[in-house]
Image (tube, rainbow, N blue to C red; front, side, top):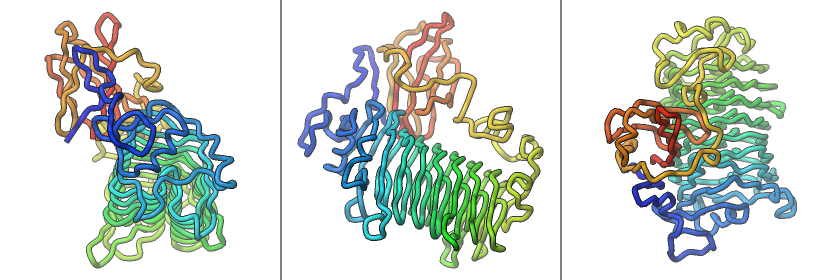
Length: 450
């Protein structure tokens, strides 16, 4: 069911959930429900997620986590949810806000499993949040946003900074199982000692999916025999589609690939697949199991469709899967004949001429929710499957332009309003809407599709 946190009608109830009352174990405003989530505005508030790992939370401001540097005798932030038996199973809606300067130092095997802002999530939803300038060190299952995700849904989220660990280390997520990651990215530097390092996800397992996402952070293998290292994903046991990596891989040893280190399919029916994706980063490895797109495919069964690597910038002329193309060819839309360059991809001078995801950049963007004008009571957001309906309370807004922006500020939809009810179908996530009249005057609203 699609719902909206911001139901804005003629009475001007712009933040209807903000005054929720209910039994709870924290001092946060709200009730921890879908309609009245707990509201988080400070670093101290953020810590209170640990008091109820099943509740619904919304960020109302950017949060500086610099104080984590001096906490827990130098270990820093305590991840939210530590194991499968004590995991976060609620929702965090970031509303486009960021958590900056998060510090974690848990390198030992006995304490360093499931490390990130969230350590372990189970069937949780996390959307529209950034973790910036992070400095995170763990042992196993280490990510800038999430250490381990079991059945989680992650959308419209991103990380920057550095993430270090021994195995299953990713810029955004360390380890996934039956999880879905979409409309997300990482520029974080990733350092992995043993195995399973990826610019976005360390290990994407067992029916997990990555869609409409990318990575650019350098992935460095720091051990003498580091294996299963990929620009986007280290170990792939699920699906990657409509995604790309510009991440460089340094010092990999075996099973090293520009997009995926190892793609695994087994006789029991679990199949990996890569669809409409590419990589262009330099790929360094010392063993025979190294490739421009995919390093290794131990058991046959993985399918790769319309996916490419740069045979020049990667330094690799072969790959166990995928198709090599020159840099010049990868800047031509004709190379990607079956790709959707209307709704999913764009190709122009942006991104150095390589294809980029349509949600990343358009000619009209906003930088954050905060520098939009006040929410007005002239738009009503109605519930609808797979999207929402904008109902205009003022017929003078007909023939205005409706703009919809993602939580990171990129325009994902625009259309002239030709009827009182405008049906908008969008992926799950937080959005900011703006109705712009021909006079230049505009009104804005916010809504969450989930």
